[in-house]
Image 1 (cartoon, helix red, strand yellow):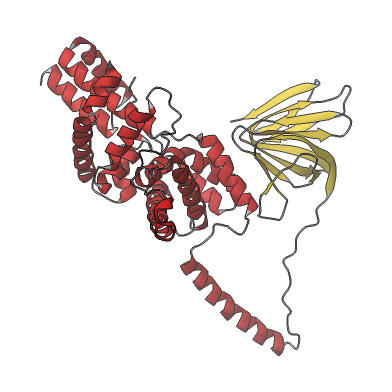
Image 2: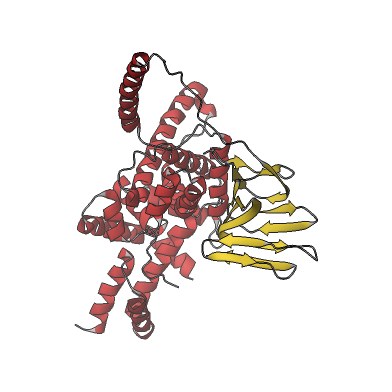
Length: 195
Length: 237
């Protein structure tokens, strides 16, 4: 039912170093490990799952190209999350430009109601999935990132703090504020799912 | 401190991701006995599961990894390495060394000409790639670029193969013998006393040898495995 403490960051360092020495498959391991987190981060910003997948892949390719600039290999997930959010911002800018050119033909990034809520989970309905994504998307950006890193990256509050160079206390406070908002906003859905 | 107060603290630790297995068992035991604490705990567990389910990627992590590796293999110019700042320093150092080298060359009366880095010649071996499933990468000895392996391609001494997740491949040896290499494995062809040898760095492979067969070995980081029968599997954790 519930998961206890995990240590997912162990191993990142050796794979980063191996990738830097030309062992490309080692980078594949990093992709596998952090794919869920990067995809979810992208999805929390761009809303469209297909676009989020593209951004996630581009983020990994960019991370690979810039791997030499990563000063502390043990902080790969935090560094990767920054790259992903930067890629999302770039995609949003391109989207705005594209919409300006195409006018009403392009889909607005905030107009997500018509987009498919593609997920690997058959337990929740599309509408429920969409509702959760929108609720998380309404969180302040600094909370969004922490929630995604906590649940999709399987990182503890302490590990998130290390990754982002913040104080553990700050991360804990922000996470608990986010939980409070989510618990309140998702209450109807949680009751629905529970029953 | 009463049990409910302790439970509240454990729920906070659960949310922070700092709960140990024994603490989780303690929390679950109390949650089963105490209705209010149980409801509180289940609500947060459900919250986490709902978020995980809603943001779960449609593309499995293994396939995403293989896809990124295939893109890197298709665009070898996307290489990782030292940062541009570091490259800048390396370039400056290289220029200084070049200038010193040229001056020394003129002084000795023989200006040096730039040479292409020496690549070892590729020595083809009587092994062929019989089948490939998924994304398998190959790197030739002396080269640092990985290519996507294709069925039917020839194999050279020094080649290193890497099968990504949910990918495998079969090498056809001379005289109807095969080696099947499982997913997440790395196999290299090396030379030992003039003979081709297989080195399994990690993963699993199964050799199917015709009967009778001569001495056949698979080396691993932990030692050498000799085939005594016609079929055997080697696993390196």
